[in-house]
Figure 1 (cartoon, rainbow, N blue to C red):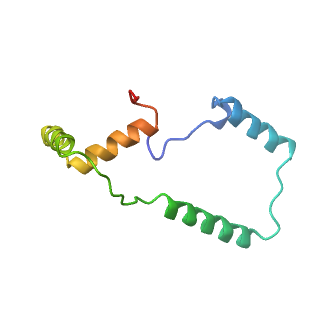
Figure 2 (figure 1 turned 45 degrees about the vertical axis):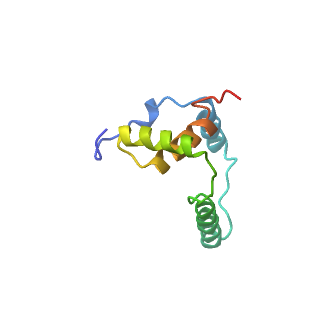
Length: 102
């Protein structure tokens, strides 16, 4: 889709959650907040605080010399820093993309 393309909103397929919101809007269930400037300021502050919590954190991790050497070799073959490889593996594990055999 290009920047200036016009979207026909009457022919957009909504998922069930989106349809629920659309129906709620049409019924008039939504009302504006009394002080929009204050509400906007609070929402922006909440978003900033959330983003602060999502920043990368440094950790100390003990690995055997042999494991670290193997990780470094694999990272070198992929052309990436070994810390990036370790971080990627942890991310894939916590998101369920890979499983640990414990």
